[in-house]
Image (cartoon, rainbow, N blue to C red):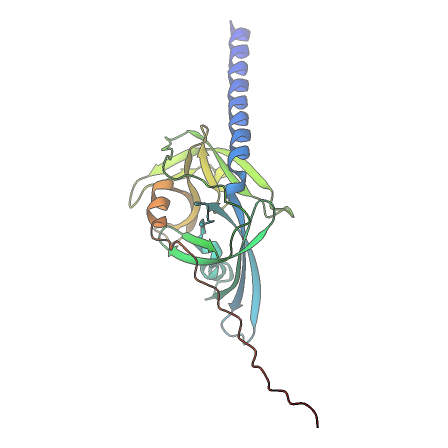
Length: 258
């Protein structure tokens, strides 16, 4: 009986692995264009130094509407806090350039239109028309996972030149309900990085991996539920502010030479 049991167990494990692989491929096909790159250029001022330094940051965002409203990690898009903790001194970072990097590598200028520091949410809107209607991740039919449910995280890798989509599988390790609801993934899932979109195996969106502060002041990565993202997104402006027009050149009066 023992060899038969081992054979059945191996068969069950193989079938489960195939289920995860098939779910991942379906998810990639459906939503890879809705998880995009975000390129941030910031001017950093360090106390005690007269000069400033330019810092470039790659982030991941999730597209929420056809016009390109995108949600990303605020602590990555506005990197003052992260840089301050890394260097050990108060850093001020002024964002000078913000772009959405679409799946085909098209760069679209964007503006930060809404912040939620408590949830680490940064909502970005394009300041120019998208080349086509965006593929979006729907928030109105979200999954509510249980502990040890297997899930998938979809991100874009900043280690490849084209920011290729990357999938990671993991499980829900814990559910925290106070002071607000969020999910904690297993280490492999957390390593997918802030901004990643987390889905159930049936393709329903669960939430976004974002940075939260613990009671001890430490930063860790958790999954903020889709419902919280949707509630905050209602406050986002329907359009991005118009970029400042370039200053007009003064016309000089010319007189014919005598």
